[in-house]
Length: 158
Image (cartoon, rainbow, N blue to C red; front, side, top):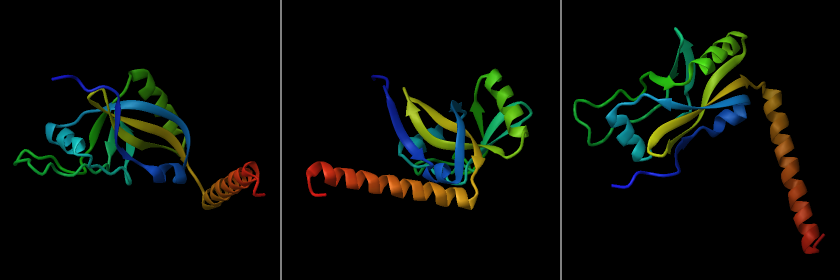
């Protein structure tokens, strides 16, 4: 059987980019059970409430919902269990220092298959205030209006 190639997106956390300003991103691996991988192959996961913590020099992904595998037996996994994150020691040491600064958190942005292995993108992020969110929405709307006006100008409709 040929090996999988490329990248296949499983789940994305669109709300994270709205609620947090992203400072840095890391591609990480996850320690999963067989039924979790089968459930992910069916394209079922939710990153909405997910976050990562650093405990005793290890990074753990918490509150990520991977539903039980439908054809699973008594060996099925718990949907919201803690999952170990695979990272290099140097990256973990940097994260320990940065998350202790205060105001910074680790948020999962997406979950995907890369060459047959489950990977995640973790972001070192700082929470936005409500006025920052409103400002971002206003900027996005103004950029959209400029694009529309430019398109009308190019087409000669003015």
